Length: 127
Image 1: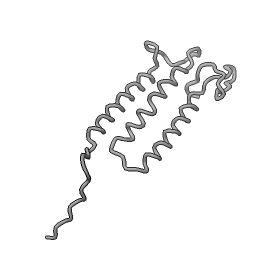
Image 2: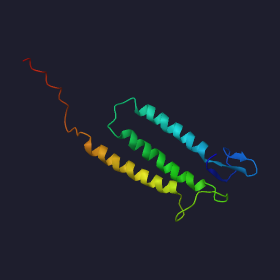
Image 3: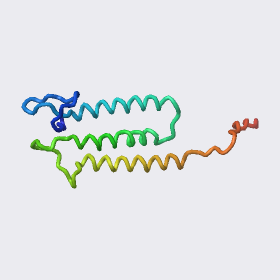
Image 4: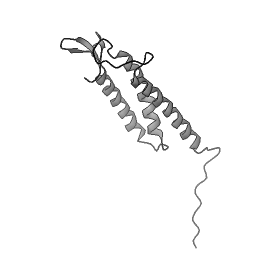
């Protein structure tokens, strides 16, 4: 319960004593992280270019975290401060997304291009 959300009647809302039902952002984030873990397991079944998992983490996690922060409580003492309407976590998520896109561009740039049929490796010459 690190970051209690806004009041809610969502079916996954947690009924906090003295506060009533509210979004439970830690629960939602944990559920999404489980989905990402499944994606990573599926990704691990094939060879991936270096950096692929970093790209996947950034592109899958950052947008969801950015969106979840809009559900954070603003009516409680100690609520996350907002800077120009966004939380520090949202700014961090934007940086993470940009970093993921940058790494993705590097991964794509370094990927070998295959323009024709793949020739077998030459046999080593005895010698």
